Image 1 (cartoon, rainbow, N blue to C red):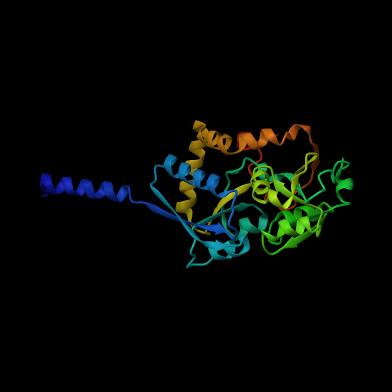
Image 2: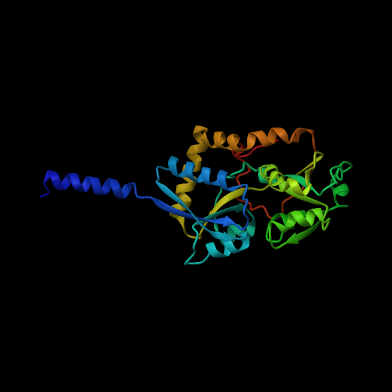
Length: 281
């Protein structure tokens, strides 16, 4: 029979075990300036808190997106999750947590333009007009196939940072960026003379999710339950507004010509019917 002292020690041990930290390893983007990282880490902390878990977030070494996806599929993976745009292929390779982290704004795109080309897209009013110009993208981004499926010309780079010098060298005409990242990227490269186009807004339906390794139902469950609770109590939206409300206001999206594209890569399971998960400018 256990003494009261033994029972007390057992309770202490059980409490300590229940509060043990869950380590979540995430990849760093292969660039010195990742405009998404602080928001994503904020969402991870929020999800863990709402799920009642003590999570320790740990950065892994930098890697490009395609390498991170391959790494997460390995049994000895050095990462536990990544955040990226969804596609049919990616949802086949990895396990998505189907809460759109940017409320769909990853599919609302504003163009960065090269030095001295601020008015390049002033006369673009429809998709046919836009086809006269070439876009730049990362070679492993789903956006490449979305833009090409719409008949747009796309040039690619295997690395992220060279895209900005390619833009100024007029290797391509415009660099479509999500409205939640374009200001940060502009600020990081403004000394090169780039500008933000004030005229058009490209839209295609898509989502940016946390992805975990196939079969990692425990971590997927923690993230899903935590994010759902954050959505229900309004803390998700508060964090979203904290990071993005200013940029959305300054970009004056309602004054732009909207060019809508289909997304042939969008999985059928995308929760488009849940209106509370999406933002519309």
